[in-house]
Length: 384
Image 1 (cartoon, rainbow, N blue to C red):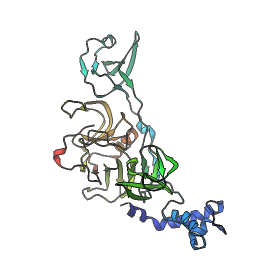
Image 2: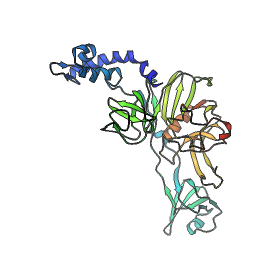
Image 3: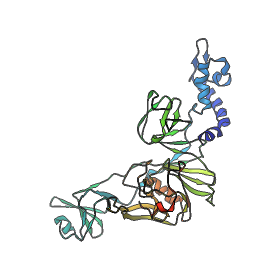
Image 4: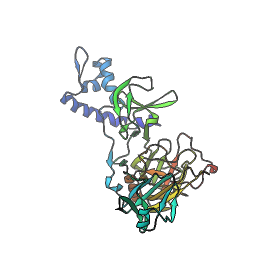
């Protein structure tokens, strides 16, 4: 797949390179002294036989591979303000559960709780904070309070994906963890001293399999192994099961999401889908309900060790029973599976997608590795 992408725009790239190199030559960029003559940029590209092998490989090969001149990924930014929500959130760390009180006085005095939310992965939204006699209480809905001890306010992650001005002619992606690149494919190759950082965007120029792992070339001498990248493979060809020219594609192996409209990719981002045992189901689905926000909660394990309670989850698009695309304010782990089957997005991305999608919009979920089971017996209703 990658080799096909890399060959699509080769002819156009060489034309661009000729003009770019002419400009670069005038500025004195990348002219190589081969010992007897200076091999300028234009000379290296147009008449490589007049330069020695070193000069040819140093620039012409980079041009052929699309690595020189470096061209930007054709992206626009998602408006960060799309991540603004009308809620503030708290995480409860109470090991014995979180009592709910129906008066401020009972919350401050810690008596007469009318209900206790069991311990687990528990988040509340709150609308007011009150301090009395050195004690703090939060109003989570009108007339319902929790005590401030044992809970903490959270910061919402700010990652966001990208809109696309054109469908890229080759793969690109995000770095998932800070990493020093290797000079070649394989962990035994020398480190370059050059670093890529979490959520950096990179072009993918080549791939080599070493020791059972794919290594991707992201620069002239920069290689990163597959587990540290979330890659988008642009493919605007309408999937066989999708009878419309607007759809959302979710690559479970890469943990990436792409949006296509009228034969073009218009949006891409990282997501977090279902963990093993709580997989996001591959297949073709349609969004059947849109909600600005909603509560999500439950447990799947018999001992309820996976219990979660999430208030005011924003920008929800249900597409497969209880599985939905939605904003996730409780983690910044995009690019890795994290959910009970839903597809988690950052808040700006979830809001962008919510605005774009309609009830009836198609969702194409696939796993190119074939590792995600497809048999019905593996899937319940799903969850956040």
